Length: 72
Image 1 (cartoon, rainbow, N blue to C red):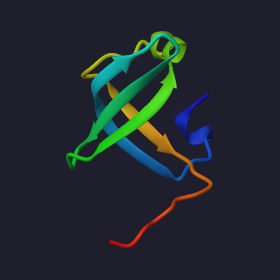
Image 2 (image 1 turned 120 degrees about the horizontal axis):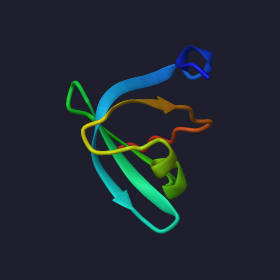
Image 3 (image 1 turned 90 degrees about the vertical axis):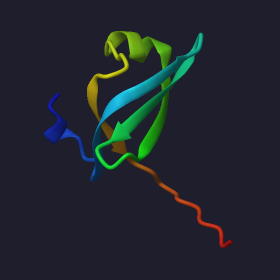
């Protein structure tokens, strides 16, 4: 499957900054060119299957059914 075949409009290119690996799920921190950190929680099995490592270039695909906002 190519990236163009995925119906996700919010995409950020970046490099993996850190991986915090757990027994079942792992946190992946992706740093964008502008310095924004996007964190994804995925299965540890997927981390291994995708061969994710710090420094690797990736695309963070963001799809959400709800975004909550609170006033300050």
